[in-house]
Amino acid sequence: MRPAIAAVMVWAGLLGLLYLALAAWVVRHRYRTKTGIGDGGDPALARAVRVHANFAEYVPITLVLLLLLALAGWGSLHLHILGGVLFVGRVAHAIGLAGSEGPSPGRAVGILATWGVLGVASALVLLTALG
Image (cartoon, rainbow, N blue to C red; front, top):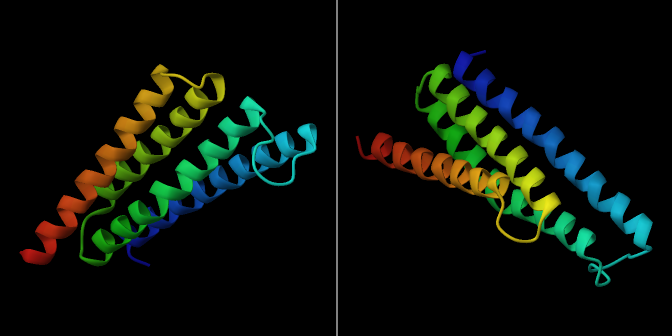
C-alpha cells in the first residue's frame, strides 16, 4: 500500500472513531433527557447535536480532498500534517462547544483548523488538477 493512502486511512480511522464518540455523547444526552428527536429544549443536548452535526458537515469533504491528494501523488508527510491538524481541530471544537454555547478558545481553534485544512486541501487539489 502506498504510504500516502495509508496516511489518509489513519486519519479517516481516527476521525471515524471521534465521530462515533460524538454520536455516543448525543445518545447519552438523549437518554438522560428522554428526548428522541430534536433537543427537547435542553441546552447540553442542543450543543451535543451541533458538535456532531458540525463534524458531519466538514469532515467528509475534507477527507475526500485528502484522498484525492494521496491519489495524485502527494506525500504522506503532507497528508499526516493536514490530517493531524484536522483531527486536533475537531477535538478542540468539540471540547470548546461542549463547555459553552458562546465563543470559546477551543471552538475558535477548531474552526480555524478545520477551515484551514479545508482551504489548503481544496487549493492543493485545484493546483494539482490544473497543473
